[in-house]
Image (tube, rainbow, N blue to C red; front, side, top):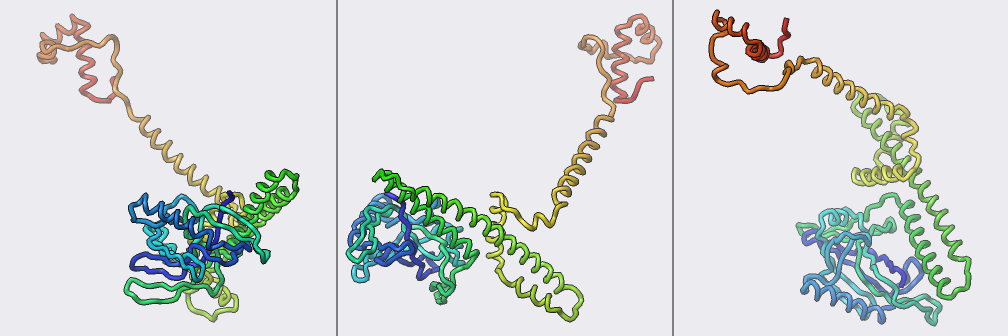
Length: 373
C-alpha cells in the first residue's frame, strides 16, 4: 500500500490549553484530485483511535506528529465522526514546546493524515475515491492561500483571527509538487510491476522528478540570495537612520520598503533555508561578493598558532634542574648532619670523593636552577 497524505487547514487554536482544532479527513476532492470515501474510511479511523486509546489507557485518542516525522508533537484529545457532513473532526493537544510555538505563530497551517491507501477505485462519476488506513495525524506547514486564517483564542480568553505564516511560498509549492510527483511515480512503478507491461511511464516520471528537483535547488538558491540582498539593504537603511538627517533620495525610500519585507521570525527561518541550501551545494552570490572571507579566517588561525608557538618557546627557554649523574643513592640522616664549612668536615669531604659528590648535588639542588661556575 502506498503512502497517504491529505492536507486540511487548521480552523481554531486555543492558546490557554494548547488545543488545535480541525479536520482529520473529509469526503472532498483533495489537491491530488482524489476523494476520501467517508463510509469505508470511518471504521478504520475508529479502529486506529481505539487502539491508541487502549494502549494509553484513554489518555490519547490518536498520535499527533510533526511533518510526518519522528517528533511526537502531542495527542488527539477528541474525535467526532460527522456522518451528516461526511467528515472526521478532531481536537489535538500540542505538548512539545517547539511545535506549539510553530502553531501559535501560524507556521503550521493544517493537519495531514498519514497512513496508507486501503483501497482505490473509480466511482460512477469517473472520480478517484479511496479508503484511508490511518497510522498518525501530523501538523504540517503546507502553504495556504494568502487569505487563509485561523481563529486564535488567547490565554485571557479573547479571540482574534490570524493569518498563517508565509515564507518562501513558491519554493514550498514546488517542493510539494515534487513530493506528489514522486508519489505518483511510486504508484505507477508499483502498477507496472504488478501488470508487467513494460510501461515507460515510471522512467519518464522519475526523469521529471529529477528535473523538477534541479529547478527547486536553483529556485531556492535564487530566493535565498534575494533575501540576503534584502538583509543587506535593511542594514544599510538602519545605518542611514542613525546618521545625520538629510533629504532622503528615492533609492533610500526604496531600501526602506524592501527592508520591511520580512519579520524577524521569518528572517530566521529564511536564513536557515539559505544556510541549508549552501550546504547542499547551492551557489550563493553573497559568497562571491566576499572573496576575502576565507583568507581572513586563515589569517586569524595563523595569528593564534603564532601565539601558541611563542608560549611554547618561552617555556622551553626556562632552565631545567641539573640531571643526576650515576646511580641514585638514598642519603641517611647521619650523612646529612654536620657543618660543611668546618675544618674537620672539609677534610672528610676531601678524603671521601663520594661524599663530596653528594654535597655538590645537594648544593646544586639548594641553589635551584642557578648555573654552576
